[in-house]
Amino acid sequence: MSTTIRGSASREQFRNRKRTAVVLVVMALFLGLTLSLVFGEKGLLRYMKLREQRAAINAEIVALKANNVELGRTVESLKTDPEYIEKLAREQGLVKEDEIIYQYEEEPAGGQPVGGPENGEVRK
Image (tube, rainbow, N blue to C red; front, top):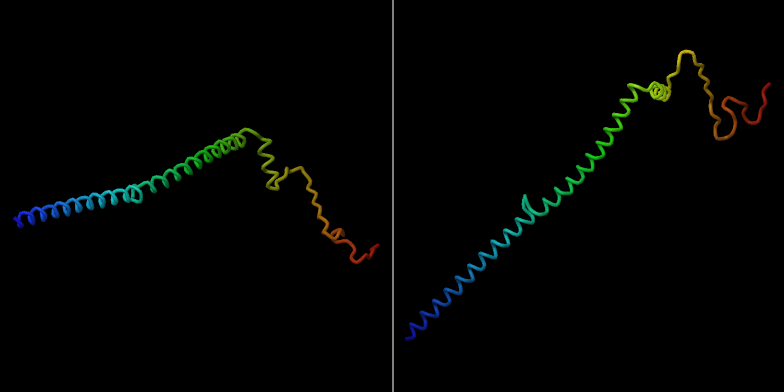
């Protein structure tokens, strides 16, 4: 009768070990799946990073569209507005043929005009 008790105890230990092994395998699979879902190539962190990139790209698209509209206005002005063309030409230093250019030299910080008497001398 002691072999029957030993046999049933041994079967019980085998079942417990088997249950423990199954639980460990399930936990390992769950842990692996969780790590993959969070840190994997298509995981949660990658998804969050892609959402940030998409938001940045959408903001850039909005800015580029606004810039495109402004450039379209500039092109239209260059095609149709002679005053705008003249303004741009003058900003580049261009003048009309019949205009006279006067250039003045600025005074240095000391207050003496450029090319004037130095050290208080007066020239006649």
